[in-house]
Image (cartoon, rainbow, N blue to C red; front, side, top):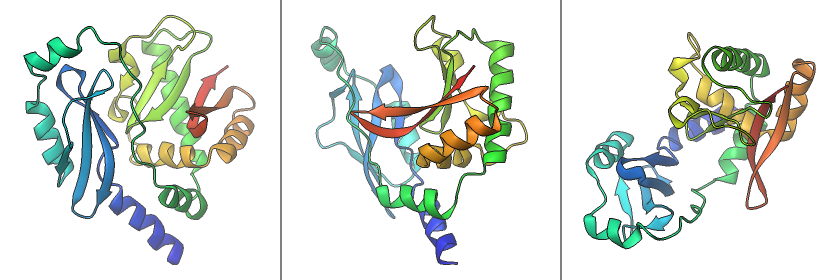
Length: 215
């Protein structure tokens, strides 16, 4: 029962998105979160554009603000010729991630079903190069050809409802698989009989999740 409560606590606390992309490709990046809401820093081309950031009490409030927020002419002129910079990492709570991975293991049967559905969607709708990968990021399922022709931003930024008909736990299934990368690699490669390879996704040397490569 203690383990179930830990997982329920994780779900209730992690209610705000880690990252949101608004108008003018402005990125809202979460820096901290508590029961009263979450704090975000705002970035354009990797440059911090809102001193002190902003706090929002709910995802609805965040999205409403993002829908109205645009880059000022002054900021655009200041930054348009500057090089883009990598974004800093949004918050990652190791305690929460460990709780999910340890106390509520990924449902690998469900994950394999989702990967089959994603592959079918890609085969029917996208250009799938030899290095084609699928990964989960920011509550979206992403498709990419990292070493070949891009599939197009609008097609690789595909939300779960477009491809996972009838599945309700898509985000949590992919999220928990990310939190258990070594086990996910072992299980997926075994269950797919080598038809899907699992690569460690890294950011600044740290493993942040997994990429699924269809062989």
